[in-house]
Image 1 (cartoon, rainbow, N blue to C red):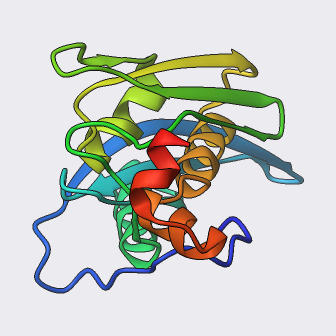
Image 2 (cartoon, rainbow, N blue to C red):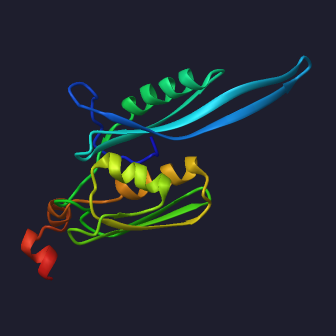
Length: 173
C-alpha cells in the first residue's frame, strides 16, 4: 500500500467493517466534444478494533466511485498496534505536503484530531489520541500520511525481541 514491509495485512472475511467517506472530488476532462465529468472518492473502512484500510475509486457516477473505493479499501486492510485505547508511542509521518504527528493520550482524552485524521483513527478503533496535521490539507495526502504514521508504530514486545532485552527493560531502561 505505502511501500512498508513490516505491515500485517488482514483479509476482510468475517470482519464487521464500517466505511466512512473522506472526500469526493469532481474532476473534469476537456475534450473536443465538450467537458467530460467524473468523480474520484476516497474511503476509509475499519472494524473499530485495530483493523483499518483506505481505498480510492474513480467513476462517472458518485455512487459507483464510492463503491469502488470501498472495495479497494477492503483489499488494503492492515492491523494497527494498539495499547488498550491508544497507540504505544508517538509517531509522525509525511506524505506529499501533508505532515501528521500522533501522540498517545491518557484514558478519557478522546480523539483530538481534524476531520480526515479523525476518520482514520476512529475507524481503527483508537479512542484516546492527540494529533496535529501540518502542511497540506489535501484529504488524499492526509489519509496516506496518517496511515504511514500508524504503520510506523511498533509493539513493545517487538522492540524487546529486536534488542534482545526483556519487556520490563524496554519501559524502565
